[in-house]
Length: 162
Ligand SMILES: CC(C)(COP(=O)(O)OP(=O)(O)OC[C@H]1O[C@@H](n2cnc3c(N)ncnc32)[C@H](O)[C@@H]1OP(=O)(O)O)[C@@H](O)C(=O)NCCC(=O)NCCS
Image (cartoon, rainbow, N blue to C red; front, side, top):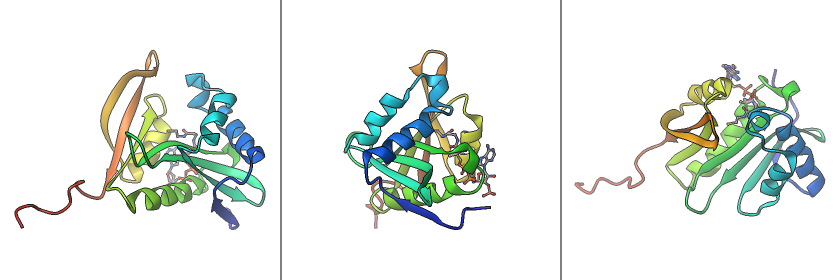
């Protein structure tokens, strides 16, 4: 069952960012990819990205990181839910927020998922994401990153013939 007191908000300090970095570093795909807590913390501290937390009380139950500017806009960089809170719709609530933010200004949400992460691939597929490409050996040799897209329509929405 979904936690009844779930709050979605941005981090307020570095202690929270450290807690979220530990959450992510302690689970796959980051373990298999060899991406450690310090590297993740650097991303969470980088103002280039937007970080969102799902909190139950003071506990960070989930984290999502999005990229709204630069070469690849409307990109979900990372999402993770603490193991104890998985399958309770925390990830769905974070994805609802991410999609609301991105689709307010773009017609596509992009993300990459590791080829071995079958569980997350199913999660995204269920939310309407399509696999649109394969980045071979992208982060680590032997594992591909699958590019996925959810679209609300073409980027150039108006029909020039009309
Ligand atoms: C993938 C992840 C973010 C999903 O978050 P979650 O809170 O566990 O997912 P939810 O409870 O919101 O699930 C939403 C729906 O997806 C389904 N789902 C979730 N995980 C699933 C799984 N492993 N296999 C099949 N379906 C799954 C649920 O059944 C649910 O369906 P419902 O709405 O009909 O009940 C979470 O499991 C996670 O953090 N995994 C580890 C980190 C990771 O892989 N991140 C993605 C990196 S690209």
